[in-house]
Length: 399
Ligand SMILES: [Zn+2]
Image 1: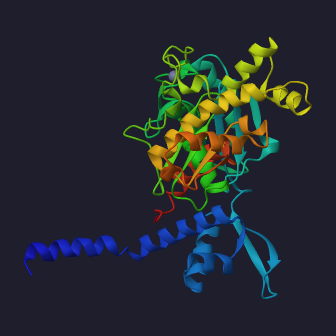
Image 2: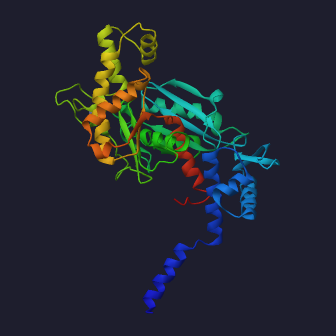
Image 3: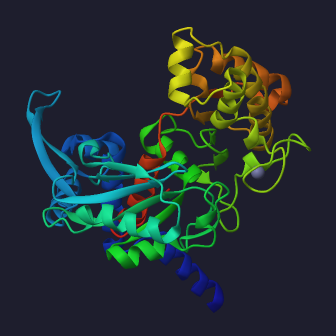
């Protein structure tokens, strides 16, 4: 064998075989991820799920307990009739903070390392109208948690609308909150709070939420279409989130469908976002009843039979179907999850939307695709984005 071949073989061998310390870190991360997916579990359950040897499992759990990542909870009786101690991701000694910025309101919610927000400690406030005011308000509302002496705070996960460079935390463009354009919200908040801040673009957040807590736990090809205020899309293809070169992929809402249509927040006219979202639907309802109404009021009044929204809903679903057909043709996903309220207005809405989209999509691409309401929300996703980077400090994830 030539010297060069021997060297390259050696390099490959060292890449393929992790050193014991690395292997242990990989296993520690696996245990954290398993607990995140399964919820509180016994040692036997974790050993079975990860496939490690029982002594290794005991040693990993002991290390994670000692370093504060895990906590022992109550015992429960196992199928063999013996009481087994239950372990969970730390919730009483450590915390993270989720922050969601929306057009009208902002939300701040602390959570344990399981990523489940503590609702009783969460706050919400109207979105400030300038960047400096937003930054100051976020710093004020998060410091109750970042400076909490009883629970170590491991970071803030920000869910941000618009085109976000997640690596740098810079918001390139936020079509519905222009004061964020060009701002480095992640680093700016980190310097005020002295904790790690991760920025997760809101459609990416929805995909993470669906993967960790929703219906996409076992899916490797799916899309989440956000139709709440604006329209955005997150796509996971072959198990990987498609972010594009700088994280700006997925802006299907700003594809033109009406060349001379309504002015969009992005400056263009007739974008899909202007005709296929909760906001677009609400505009139709408002024009018809000639009055102001919120989405909750419209839902409640339509359920009581006080207003008939069927025509407005169908018109919105017609346009939404164009977007769904495009997604199936482009990405051939197993499922498309809709985040928004449109499907709440009629129990047949998802079925009608599927039929309308089927008429427009290429039949082989559309075959067996599931279209239903998303279960996750953006706050869960912002927390999941932060926990991904917090858990990465324990060890790498094998995927
Ligand atoms: Zn637009």
